[in-house]
Image (cartoon, rainbow, N blue to C red; front, side, top):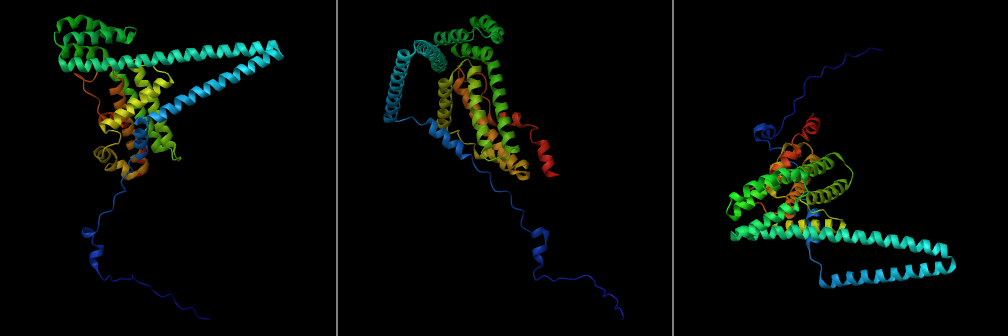
Length: 341
C-alpha cells in the first residue's frame, strides 16, 4: 500500500469587496463606556427627607405617640400592681426597675433637649452674624464674636486663637473686620478638622464602591459614612447632639442641598473626574467610586455650611472638586495599574 505525499498548502488570499473597511484611517473609533448612572437614589432620599410633613401627618404621629405612651403606662401599672398583690418582693423589684428606667429615660430626654438648645444657639449665631455683616453693625458684630468666644470657652485647642482674638479685636472698628478676625482665629482650625472628616468619608465611600462587588454594599457604606460624617462635623463645630439632634442636623443638611440645587453631582464634575477620566474607562467600578465620593464630599461641604456658627466671610468655602482630589489622590492608582495590566 503506497503512501501519497502530503499536499502542500500555501497562503490563502481572501478578497474583500470593499477595501475601505479595513483601512485604519477610516475605521470608526472604539465607543466609550456607557455614561455613569447618576446617583438618583441619593437624590430621592434627600428630597424625601427635606420635604416638610403635612399637618395631618404631624397630628397623626403626635396622637399615636400619646396613645402608645398612655397604653404602655397603663399596662405597666396593672402589671406592677398585680405583681405586688401576688408577691410583694417581686412587685417592689419590678417597681424599682421601672423607676430606674424612667430616671434613665428622663436623663436621655434632658440630653436631647440640651442638644437641641445647643443647635439652636449655633443657628441663631449664624443668623445674627449674617445680619450684622449685611448691615455693617459693629455692636452686633461684637456681640456675635463674644457669644462665639463663650461657645468655645472650654475648647483647649482654641485657646491660642481666643487669646489672639482678644488682643486684636480692639484694633478693629468695622463689623466685617471683627467677624473676619473671629472667623480666622476661632473657626480656621475647626474648618481644617471638618475638611479632614469630609475627605475621610469620601475616601471610604469611594473605596467600598470600587472594591466591594456586593449588591447594595455601596449604598449601605454611603449612607452610614454620610450620617457619621454629618454627626462628626456637628460635633467639631460645637453642636454635640443625641439621636434626635443628629436627625435634625441631617435633615437641615439635606434641606440645604435641595434648596441650593446641589444634591446631585453636576455633569461637569462627573465628566471631569469620572466619565471622561482614565479610571472610568479602565473599570466602571472605579468610576462609580469617584462619583459616590464626589457626592459624599458635596454632602460634607453642605454640612459644614449648616453647622458652622459663622457663614464664610473672609475664609473661602471648601470646594467639592478640591476636596475629592485631595481625598482620592493615589487611592486608585495601584488598582488602575493592575486593571490596565
